[in-house]
Image (cartoon, rainbow, N blue to C red; front, top):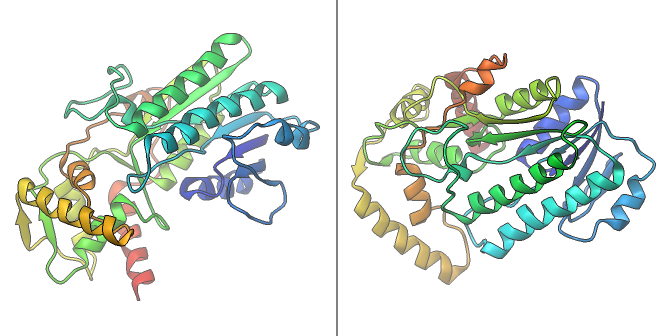
Amino acid sequence: MKILLTGSEGFVGGYLREELEKIGHIVYCIDKVKVSRTNYFCFDLSNEISSLAKLLKDERFDLLIHLAAAKGDYNLKYDDFYRDNVTASEKTISLVKVLDIKSVIAYSTVSVYGHDNKIKSEEADLVPNNPYGATKLESENIFIKWFNLDPIKNKLTILRPSVIYGENNFANMYNLLDQLNKKFPVSVGKGNYIKSMVAVENIVDITVFSINKLRGLQIYNCTDKPYPKLKEVIKYIAEIKGFSKPKIVIPKWFAYFIGLLFECFSFLIKKDLGITRERIYKFTMPTDYRSEKLAEVGYIQKYSVKDRIQNMANWYLRIKK
């Protein structure tokens, strides 16, 4: 296939581009990062797309994979999420129409369900409770509206991954590794609750699987199985020399107080110090999202939870030397 990939220079985008090219697809890439590479276009998708459309007008694409998005919780305002998740999706659909692309895979997030401690399948209510989830839900609706323009010819798959982790990612899992690598690791609570996650290698594999199953409108949660509890994740990491289980366990209320202090200091020095009340909340909140629907259509998970967590732990130790 000839594939148009947005957000190609992000964490998942880099893995996905490499895998798509490895298995023989021709990949054209769009991102805001300045990169010198064949078939790469440096472009902000929240801008008017006419100039980009002119550059691509002679190409015939079989598929668009939309990864470009704003994600994070430090120094991002609602307007930032809206621009990169909603406006960029609107412009991307305009590009899809101009280039007459009939098949789309759009990345969304389990955050469209919100976080209320309940098990979530794809049939759960969509009640996001943060700007990221709310704007990604708006993005989903933009793509669904496009699909409904011609549901006979158009094909749309929406993937809703949970926390994605792996080598070269410096977010949630990295922060946990960093904590367990300390002389006196600290944890909040006992960790006796499920934390949904998906290895980057598995989400890439799910995407490749979806390419071969394009038809109608499909929506899938993307999480690794079995669904691990936080204490099990910590156990896997602590099996690697260089890490250990928490020696200090503090209550949530005290952790939030510490988070507030770090936020104040971060604001004063204008630097992300890695600890915020929002991150503590996410760490201590059960996130039980189920991906049984993927298995029902024939997807078989390629990499195990333990293997990928320990692989990232070993990567962490290498880069810390």
